[in-house]
Image (tube, rainbow, N blue to C red):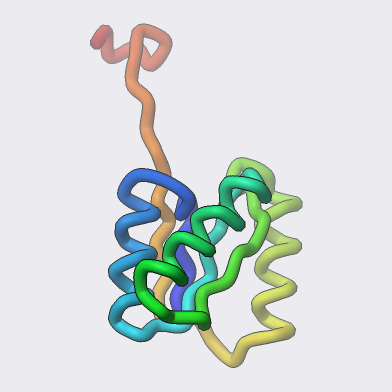
Length: 98
């Protein structure tokens, strides 16, 4: 099983679509249930892979991550691939002055 965070848009979505096209069992993690479920439907339609699933998880919340991890541990033998698609925003507040 493969897990991709931030999988409802951008690079996360494109990677999820590619993994699904290759026949992977896939968990797409998103903070928004509506956007996550729409992304799963789009990936399933584009790839004909029905073994693509949504999980609600906000990786900025340790409680959310712990709940997700417990669910995965209970339901799946192992995770073969985890892509933590974390976004980075750099600006004045970062101290980098960009």
